Image 1 (cartoon, helix red, strand yellow):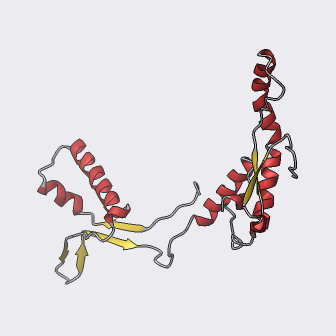
Image 2: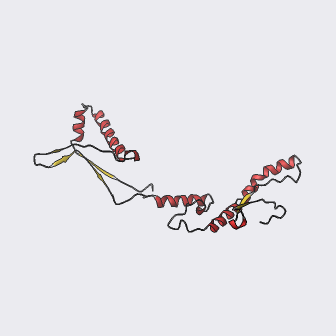
Image 3: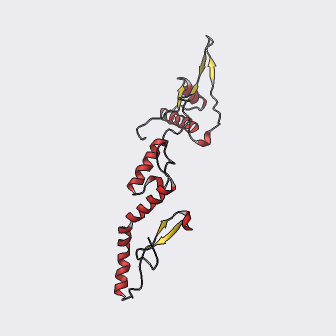
Length: 192
């Protein structure tokens, strides 16, 4: 994406345009002429770019020479009008996909699956992917609980005090609920 070039407009400026502009604005200093030229280029770029400029009108002068030929001072040509936008969608989807893998999250869990098969995962697949992701997080949860276990031992708190990070186990709707809470320490009559 960084190395691609997307040129939307070609701007042609007549060789006399700036001479006429300098004369109109009484600019004679060469440094001021250079600065005014840069300002005019930026004005044209700003006019052509951005959503807020959609639908604006550009007025440009022209004259007819003794041979009857029109000489335009500025001509703006729209290039490549066949494209309908979305030039970077596939690249952005692939970047989102790679970011998901880097964070250890399957792209379909957040809807970042590139290509035409975006909706090919069923609810069961997503539920299983979510369960696998939570299972992979168990070592990190255990590490996060170590300071609390040390505090419990230091304070001689009862072993009945359970320090746990529960996670949600997604179920099917025929179980009466779409999720149930599961802890690392099974309770009575709790089947995982």
